[in-house]
Image (tube, rainbow, N blue to C red; front, side, top):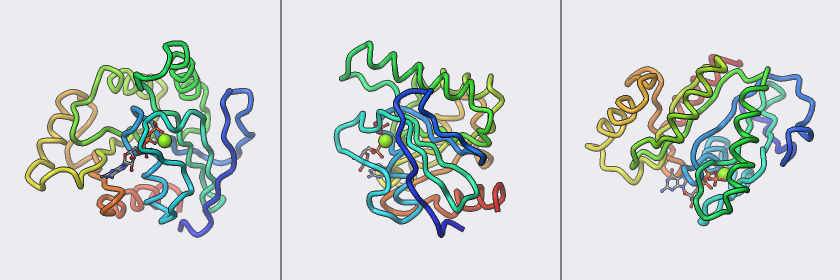
Length: 194
Ligand code: GTP
Ligand code: MG
């Protein structure tokens, strides 16, 4: 598992999406929550996915081939305020169309910063995934910035805002720097694809 991981392609338009024969796991959520860091930490590679301290780094849809078994698809983060409105709308459209038209999407991972309450954009994303009938997990990121005692509050807040999120069912506490949650993610993907 995870022995052959490779970057395939970045695309900025749906027309350029590569022809795909494998099921997909999509990574989605607000900008700067740690989606790209998740890829590097999970596969233990420093720079497979591009990360930056300035948010809004991933502007394209990025495809990774995992063991010729499934594709991991890093979607651009939405909601980053410091870009023009038209560019923000373009990203929103790209992501929503990708979700709506993605026939091969087997699973979505919805990333949320564990320190923050989910926003209206998270509610919208959740609706989109629900409407498209895509199974999903919620990944609470950057838990290394929380005290152990704050973990349960973070999951509780999430489950209060998004009723689909259920403690001990579909919420994973994650940290790219500390490796927390990796085992759980590997179990989820392992059960699904291996
Ligand atoms: P976009 O590409 O804008 O959608 O952002 P993204 O969701 O891909 O976030 P990215 O992985 O680029 O991370 C954003 C910032 O958060 C970077 O400075 C990362 O180093 C930091 N970061 C990501 N994950 C973690 C984590 O688990 N712990 C800590 N402490 N920092 C993290
Ligand atoms: Mg990114």
